[in-house]
Image (cartoon, rainbow, N blue to C red; front, side):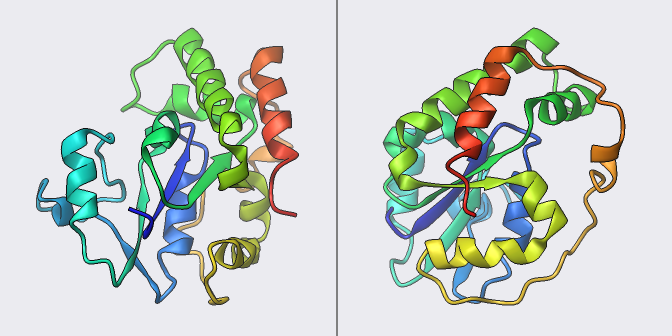
Length: 196
């Protein structure tokens, strides 16, 4: 599974944006559920946590390709991966507010806060094998993704924004949510590790 790049992070932290940009690289193949024999769609997420069965299916993929997959919650299963990890980070005020607003995410504010801390606390344990990317930086300049390609031992490749993130202009507005000091401290610690 060393030929799989995993995009992880708190849900609503920009993992979909990262996938949409990184998957444009000609040397990467977007790993879908259908490729693992699960469903017919080519959805954005691989959509499977790393069970023993899933790991075996991933190991059975052709080794002559490099795959990229996005399942944000794989952030809690880094110990079960061998490939490159790309972790999206986003200010907890913004990420948690976005998660609360998402109609498909059914958790309380407190649960989101605990999940944010749990994810980034776990990612920090594996910081030496993770490329951290700040969502705000990618939104402000998608060409920052070039540094991620280099970090993954890939050549530079011109990318374009396929969809405009609704976040553009968000940073000038009043924050709809204020995260705890604990969540904010994990964001700051991860942000120091981001690509410059």
